Image (cartoon, rainbow, N blue to C red; front, side):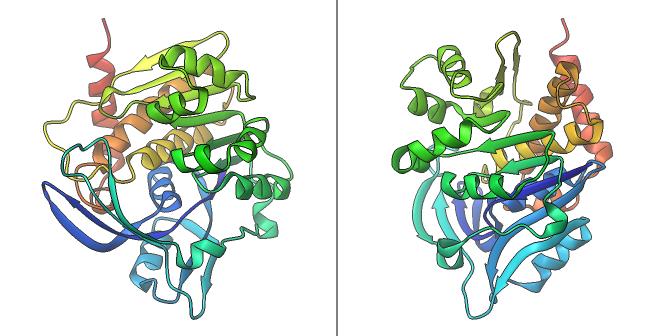
Amino acid sequence: MSILVVGSVALDTVETPNGKVVDSLGGSATYFSVAASFFPSTIRFVGAVGDDFPKEHIDFLKNRGINLDGLDQIRGGKTFRWGGSYIDDLNSAQTHFTELNVFGHFAPKLPNSYRDTPYVFLANINPELQLEVLKQVRQSKLVVCDTMNLWIDISKPALMETLKQVDILIINDSEAKQLTQESNLIRAGRQILTYGPSRVIIKKGEHGALSLTESEFFALPAYPLASVSDPTGAGDSFAGAFMGHLASTDQPDNEEAIRQAIGYGTIVASFNVGDFSLNRLRNLTIFEIEERYEQLRKMVNF
């Protein structure tokens, strides 16, 4: 099965207690695509970069089997850059600078070959752009979206319109509370279901994830880690592995398949935070993923 992802491509400067990287490969669509590429699905990528974007990054994505027909490299433009640190709290980034550059004028246009993609992921871009993407999609089995606190603050009407048209919302715990004005995550999740999605998955960082529908509830802890190098992209890699596995089963309405997909999302995210940028995912194998997945299954079996 094929997966469409529309989101950001970035060059990140990140500092944590374990070190610092400058202009490292990042962006929501990038983390998602690489995580999804571990599963037998075709990834169709839509994003924008400047002509300063290193060729080695393009080669890396192509070598992962990711289709870059939708990647727009803008001549004379500069790639989106973000800088931040996780010094006091590894669950929360402090932003030092944001340079939107070509991403500030990003207007996603799907190649014709992308428009019938059955699985669609709208990364945490402006919800007005998410709506534009949905207008271009002709047929889909499953539409999943992410969002962030900025869009809840400044573009909530468009976000609410997007939520009417998606099947699953993936959101973190603080954003779920912000979106619903509920202090309790269960109440927040149930409230989000009234906005349109048939399922909401709430990411809780080191505390795992919750999945709610009108009739089902599922909670999974995070894989326990002794150390974390860089949390950047953990949520996007979770979403990528989640959709990668689910698309490979082609059972978007099957509760067991969805729970397994949440497990794979949890595992790939746990590897992602083990090094800066996408460095750990570069040499990760499906054998390691399956091994840790089975360890997690044994941990929660009682």
